[in-house]
Length: 108
Image (cartoon, rainbow, N blue to C red; front, side, top):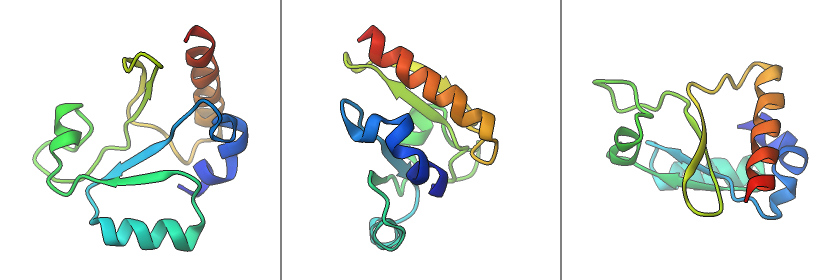
């Protein structure tokens, strides 16, 4: 998540016209504390049951943990791009993400 935070201004246009939501099976209290301590400029949502993750194929089958999927939703509310799993430790993944976000914003 630090890489998202550190590249937020560039990739996500500093939140202008873009909303970044991080969904996790962690409890909301833990996510709130973590987001505050790390100064993340985006919102965290808690999916303790894993229901949302399962609906979108974003959980590890048979386990209540996410598989690091990343979804880009266009302004119409449709999934424009899926990066699954997102390679958060690979610098090239952020270049791909930036291009996908720019493409989605241009097409909206």
